[in-house]
Amino acid sequence: MRRFAVIAVLAGVVSSMSGCDVPTKSGGPIMLVSLMEYDTLADVSAEIDLSTLTAVDYNGGRAVKLQDLVTISMIPEYDNKTPGDATDDVDRRQLYGYRLIGSDGFSAHLSRGGDDLGWSAMLLGYLYLDTRDAAFDASLNLAGMYKTRDVEKIEIYREIDIVLPDTSWRAVIAEAQHTTVDTKCVVMLTGFVAGVLSPETYQYNLTGVDGYNKALTWAELQTAYFELSADLVGYTVEMAGAYKVRNLASITVSTAQGT
Image 1 (cartoon, rainbow, N blue to C red):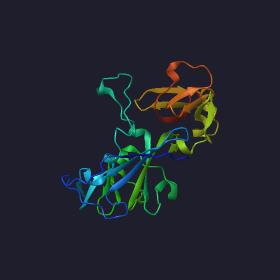
Image 2: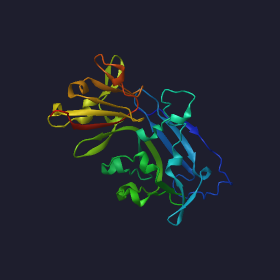
Image 3: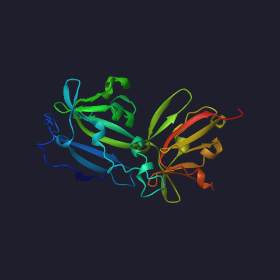
Image 4: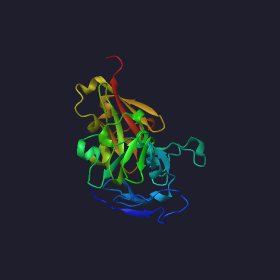
C-alpha cells in the first residue's frame, strides 16, 4: 500500500488543566493515529496529544480511553440521507478495524495473524499513560496478544465482517485483491467468501452499517463488487438501486431457502 500521510496536529500543546500524567515511553505524550486508505486515496493521520484527553483510573493506573483517540472528524458519521438531522446519524467507526502497533513493531494482526480490534473492543479499551500499554475490560475475554505494550501508533483499516455457519473473521479491504470496473477501483465480493464449498447452495446477506440488508444468490454475488472510493456495493450487470448497499458492514453466508 502506498502511504500519503496528511498530518493534522489536533492538540499540540500539553494542557496543564487536563490532569493527565505525561507518558514516559517511546512516543511521549503524542500518539500517531492513521486512517489507512487505499492506493487510490490518501491516508489521513493525526497526532493526538494524550495529555489533553480525559484520564480515568483503571486497574490501579491512570489511563485514557482508546475510543477517545478516534474522532468523528477522522471517520465522519453516515447521515442516513437526512442532512441536517443528526438524530439518525450512524457511527461509521464500527466499520473499521483498529491495529495497535508497539514500539517494537508488534501487532496482533501482523505478528500473530489475529483479527484487528473491532470498535466494540475499542469502546472497552484503555491506554495506560505511564507505560502506553493497552488494556481491555475483562468481559471482552480478549487474547493476551491484544494487550500491546508501549503502543507507538494506531492504524485504522476499512474492514468487513465475514460470517459463515461455522466461523467468522474480519476481511481487511486493503489486503484484498483489487480490480477495475468501469475505471473504478473495486474488490469483487466473491473474493471474501473464497473457499466456501458448494457456494451455489447458500445465500449471501449484505448488511450496511445502518442495518439495511439485502440477500443475494450466488449468481448475483458473482457480479457484485465493493467500490472503494464510494464505499458502495455495485454490480457488473444492471441491478435495482435497492441492491446497492452503502457502508457495507458484513456478509453473512447462510443456507439458501429451499435447499
